[in-house]
Amino acid sequence: MDESVKYAKERHAFGRPIGANQAIQFKIADMEMKAHTARLAWRDAASRLVAGEPFKKEAALAKLYSSTVAVDNARDATQIHGGYGFMNEYPVACMWRDSKILEIGEGTSEVQRMLIARELGLTG
Image 1 (cartoon, rainbow, N blue to C red):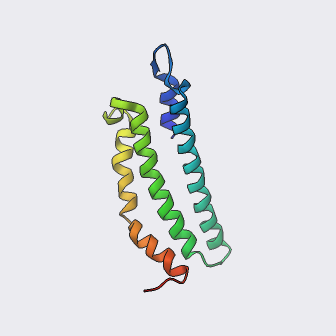
Image 2 (cartoon, rainbow, N blue to C red):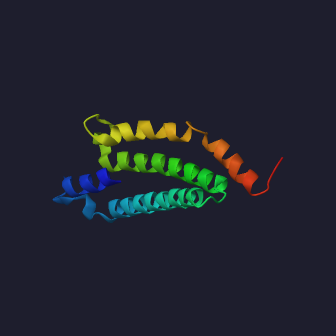
Image 3 (tube, helix red, strand yellow):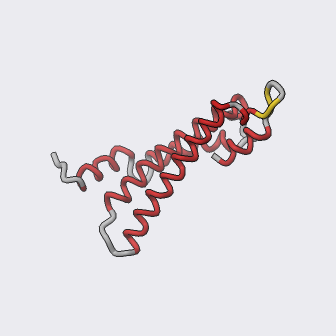
């Protein structure tokens, strides 16, 4: 998200920064909303852990949502960067590739969904 804001301020098209375009503004605003919500989910799970409260469901929710947001935001950042988003000179090129492992490692997204469902009392 930070790289997208920086790039949207620096990159000019048609005589003005691309960040002046509402479509870019909305995409970045959505990215910020998702990142902020992911941080809140993580903090909720962590505060439950520290307080000695049950936190399995909250941890699974945080992992699932945060990994999904990481992939979505990295994809959107690549879109904002256009062709530069695929060049290794720009951090977003690595971010999109690297973010995918978050949906796979340390419990796949499918496993997180199973844990959430189980914590909600849904068994099969």
